[in-house]
Image (cartoon, rainbow, N blue to C red; front, side, top):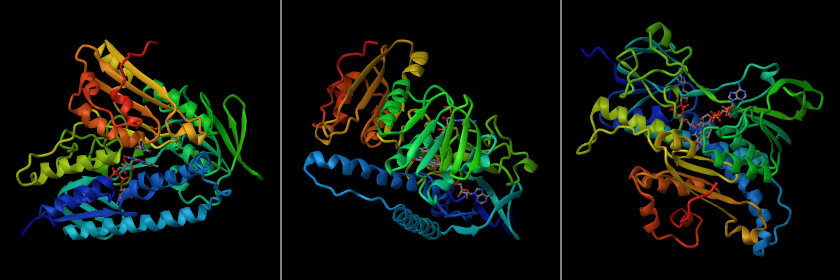
Length: 455
Ligand code: FAD
Ligand code: NDP
């Protein structure tokens, strides 16, 4: 008799876990996926999807204002937070159902509850013991809340989607992806937003031109962005929350969002007892095939990666399934290339980026040529908006290869996806130059940049 009930038990039904479970089950493996909350994980429930829906909602504020320049008379629009929340919740419930159907359709068993590793081949969920040849940890991450006085009065992004009532005055702490996106969204929806970043720039890992330009554009939308600002204390007062900053400045708010990073979910799942090693950031340490220090235990996605993005988690899942159960018929086994991973920040205006920042390229290649353009998009010649667009190419001077493409402006995420393919293909600046533009678009600027920037 088989020692195992399953070939694969997946702990966590988020982006990475569901993809791995579904693909493995489709290959005929006996699979169970253990999920303590809602299927789909962070991305579907409190991440990418609801965030993007709220970003669309917020963009209507600009659209109503800009419509007049195009001849539309729009009566004073009124925003109803309850309607947006209810419609979002309905859509997320629909997606939860789709995830359930996909897993069941592929033949995977869904086990509801909190799972823990009992031994290298056993996951315990309540009374149930699931014996598995392979165990996959795909438990994702959790918001990190800094240890300051009154931190318990603040909330994380998990609580932002159902906030009640709508926060008229919102303080956002942080300058990363989540802080910038939520500052833009809630500003667009009508909140008075103050954003406090501890360092001298927002999106500190991004190209410096992008950080500065975005800060200026977000400022134009009415966000009060304060750099080198640290919260020291939060207290509750009759009229809301009261913040004291390190420099003594005082602020009042209805809600305080800490968007100060996320940490891998490695607690209370039995890793210590089994001797599963973590790296210096607290993530599960894995080899090139996502195997942990315990040979039957694998990990991927936010719990182990330093690129916590949904497409990275799903790509890792497909590579792992190919490794454990063999590739698709006639196809080579997939692996993940961590070079040139494109990413977008859904601020208003959004950011899209792929490849090296100017600073990193100078360190890596030495001699780099920069091409940069900044302009008022055609739409805003009539819209009355003062929003501008920045586009930038970083070129390795020796090989002429384009090694970085960066943009702040309308549709930046949509535009950058295609340029990511060009970068991965090793496109040179000469190839960019010989590509015919699509007119009139903003994207065509990327193939018509002729003169290097002079700083
Ligand atoms: P998760 O999706 O977090 O799934 C982990 C699952 O494991 C959860 O469902 C959890 O309940 C479950 N779990 C944990 N422990 C246990 C246990 N012991 N037993 C049972 N179940 C357990 N990425 C993008 O690419 N684009 C975006 O626009 C984007 N926006 C984001 C916005 C926000 C506000 C946040 C927070 C994240 C965003 N991300 C975005 C990141 C993206 O959501 C994550 O990278 C992705 O969800 C990681 O997938 P995962 O499978 O590793 O983990
Ligand atoms: P980030 O790492 O992007 O940003 C964290 C921010 O918090 C930084 O500005 C950091 O400052 C600041 N910070 C860290 N610790 C403290 C502290 N103790 N006190 C004050 N400020 C602090 O994390 P997020 O939480 O924004 O997002 C987590 C991850 O989720 C992202 O890295 C991204 O991979 C993913 N994500 C992706 C999205 C997308 O693809 N559009 C959207 C949302 C999330 P400093 O800059 O000085 O380090």
